[in-house]
Structure formats: C-alpha cells, structure tokens
Length: 186
View (cartoon, rainbow, N blue to C red):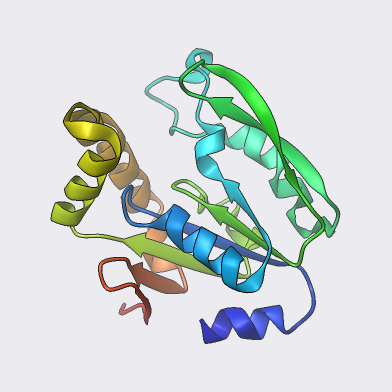
C-alpha cells in the first residue's frame, strides 16, 4: 500500500490495474482501495464480448472497445464514460461515468493485455487457491455456475495468464486468502 500512497502523493492521475483469477477478490480490493483513497473503478466485466465476436481466436474481452472507450482516455485527466455490456441481455445496458479523479482502477481479468500495460502506474495480480476459488464461485454463482466457470471461463483465464505472463508482469501479488499485499517472489 505504501507504493500506492507514494503514487497518489504525486498529484497526477494514477492508473492501477488489478488483474487475476476469478474469485480472487479483484472487485473487493478495487472497492476497498477506492474507499480508502477515493477514485473510480473501470470493470473489465463490462467489456465481455458480444456473441457476434466470439470465437476460438478471441479472448473473452472486447479489447477494441476498451481501447476506444477507456484506454485512450485514462491519462487525459478528463471525465469520460463507457458503455456496459450486459451478459444477461446480450446488449448494452447503461453507461458508467468516470469523473475527473486522481485515481482510476481498472479491475478484472484481461486488463493486463500487453497493449494496455503501459497505461498503468501500478499493477496487481489477485491470486487465490483452487479450493478457495471454488468455494467463492459456488457461493456467488451456485454449483451450476461453478461448473460453467470450471469448464469454460477458468481455462480461458489460465490460458491468458500463461500466454501473456500476467503474474510476472505485475508489481505486487495480492493473496486474497490472507487479505494483504505481498511483494511478488520471482
């Protein structure tokens, strides 16, 4: 947390990315940081792919729309908005307004795609054990939901983490089971 406080003391816009495994506490950590330091959160879940873009050659994020609606505006120190893709309706539901604030956190898997890494002043990988991940997903999405995560979403995320060496490229590893930040050990 000291590094975040040092960055914030610079009085310029700070962008933090929290990427990591589903059920690892990314959203909770982002919300806690905003509660402590102020700021706004951009959620990568709002950029799921619409059905017409899905395929074997795609990762599960509409990175082109993220680049257009968010990435190009993160450092501008101006307010902006982006559209939210709703997976239940398979359509855009609303817009999120990001005010002119010093701290912006991009939270969610796929935030650390190589083309976005340079946007961030600080990068956190949220990690969790397989057992705790399963417990949290069942608690949040039910047993059927966990089976979908286990067979579809977790393998896609793991492929992304490995292919892009996401964990190694982050500044800190957040071990959510211990509720604290640790220096990464590489």
